[in-house]
Length: 263
Image 1: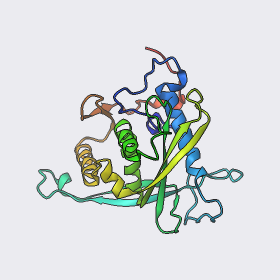
Image 2: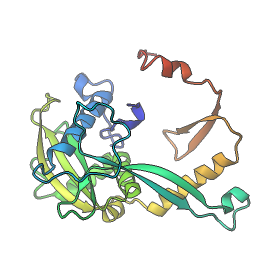
Image 3: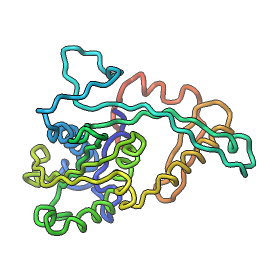
Image 4: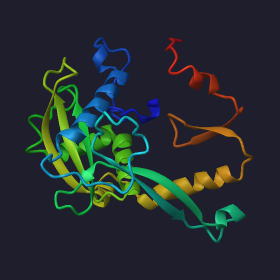
């Protein structure tokens, strides 16, 4: 998948993972790969296999290998209408805009009522977090620390759950069995949260999030048809929009992932 889909680890921490550390398995890209693998396996490991899976109305649009078994999850396609602003100075801003979005659901709730999202936070260095001695007695402090160190990832998971109409989020805490072994892990704890309550806990305002989307759409709708690149300024709360030629990135797409070069 794209690098934009990778799961960051401690990206917003005071001292985020460095590319210069001696242990290659603790570098940002390796930690992202580890986090992705953990979440993929964790979301399947915690399911109740004795309960029959609920068939969906349509088959997965990405499944074309009948001899392979799909992981348990489902996509939900939803239409969301963003109302216009009557006081806007442009016709685009005054008109409502409808969006078609695709969200994902990991499982049904044990009661069979409502959807669940299953995610996992992972600990790679006990010197940084030390979950084993803290989760049972200081869960609130541990979660607060993770919200601070992984605010982008947790906000992303919560936004995905809200878009998908997921009622419940299950958050697992997974740690390496050995700090030097990125392949073997232990599930230390799993906690359940109501999606809207968790959004409030991490300081996410759904209306504000949709307001950002609406503002971005209004800006793009006033521009000429073309190809654009949206880049977040790493040091400021600013999004920059760059105009690109139509054939930009075509060569990279045709050539696959390409080779990584040092600069």
